[in-house]
Image (cartoon, rainbow, N blue to C red; front, side):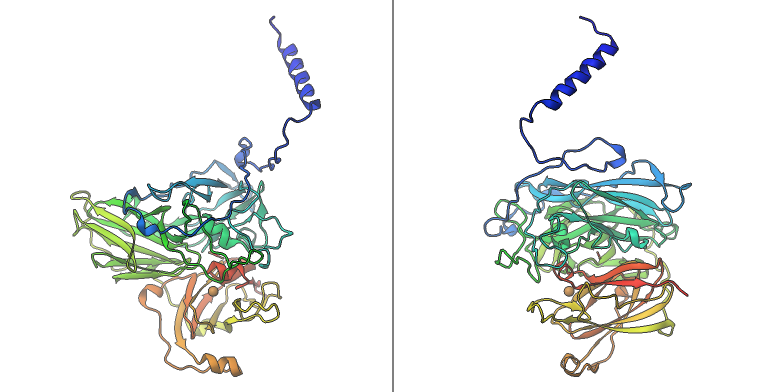
Length: 552
Ligand code: C2O
Ligand code: CU
């Protein structure tokens, strides 16, 4: 019987009413109300019970080498524009990134590995922008409610009364107002999102985004929550650097896998307190693959290297012993290329390299971490040549004069907590996270921070918001310092090598050394953090808030 539109609507209405009174057949865990990417349809969030890593770790060195092509993370496309929060007249590109659980093969011969990725991939898609081009990113937590990895509820900020899965995105190296910086305590849970504004008023640089949730950053990042954020600008365009398909980001990190090919995060063995002070793994992953290969033309390439490991540093060389140029560091281009045969990256550090394959047509060259293969370059017999000479000058990095500093702060790494009996804990200046703020530089002033490393390990120290310069590293008497708080140097100050003499946002502080950095606190007033980028340390309070005060 034909029905008219009005009848159809009525019948539809009745059917809905009938459904509403019938008992639910099956009570599934309710879907969280996702704040939607640009109003898109509600997406289903996967729920499952927690699977703890099983069995002894798998030995990745048994895998075939160089059978998977190197994945290159796609550049994220914006989903239209939205008004700027500061100036509603100004439309900014709007991006939406959902953090999702995903399955991906780390190697042809492994089962897919369950991971957590931005936009469901590890690494996440690359966000690209230009200096001065602000943008908005809505970071949506579409993750399960149970963590993929064992959470330690004793760690500050990760207590059992908090949701187990919490996220907050931070763009490492970004000059961003405090409300968009990713303050670790302002996390959100599964089904929620936050939109951050990145003004990008800064020079071209290889930045990266990653999770920063209080007390579980190490787990969220080990699960896969990181990606590149690349800022370009005219000064860089004017240089004849390899670009387009010859400009490739490489993120390197270590993972441990169980026999099922699943992520295996080391625990203390005490199920009530699984936190471990440090974690190094035996499988080195590059852009999401173990031992990938990349076909290259016999010409120059630009590779933006990032160490996204929880705790491991990488000392990288090329198997044929050839040299390469480092052209940039954390905060952008160096004043001139530095010719090197090896590069060391501590967690969160970046090195922008130019590798010239033109004399190596037909060869296979392996990027190595010490004696372990990371990836292979297969140089084609022919292909595009770039005959332009490598530039001698890149971009000036004016040294900040020590005389400009209005304050020098002596800050220790390593005073241990005694009241909780937690002898493995390392603190900044002996101060817990929740103590009142002690570092309060004034906006647009220069300070010197002298970082006294009293521990036996190197710690990569990162300051949010700012870029800085390394002044020097100088050995001192740790025993004398511990006994009487007197700083006695035992050797001369060593200035940084040229590859560390550009803009940095993360600095390696060697054991038994005072590492001095000089910082101009440019950007925005407000609350930021500084911390050790060994994630197991950072999560256990080797992190402090700091305030940038307004000039008065
Ligand atoms: Cu790479 Cu506080 O961050
Ligand atoms: Cu540390």
